[in-house]
Image (cartoon, rainbow, N blue to C red; front, top):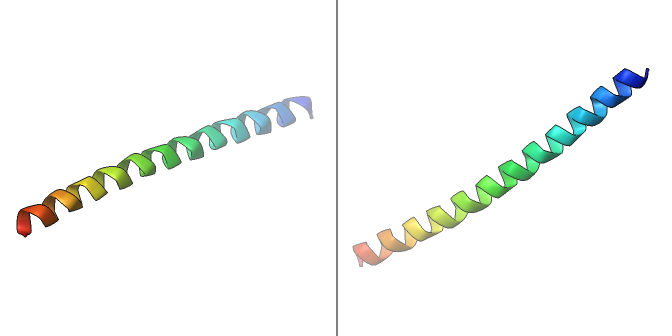
Length: 45
């Protein structure tokens, strides 16, 4: 029982870290895409 609980805690921790990392990456990508879109729009006009 104790080992099962410890394993589930580790899985939750790694899952939480993974979700934070994905959120961080999507935030960076959103900013990069916004910058690219602005560059493209200014080049078109």
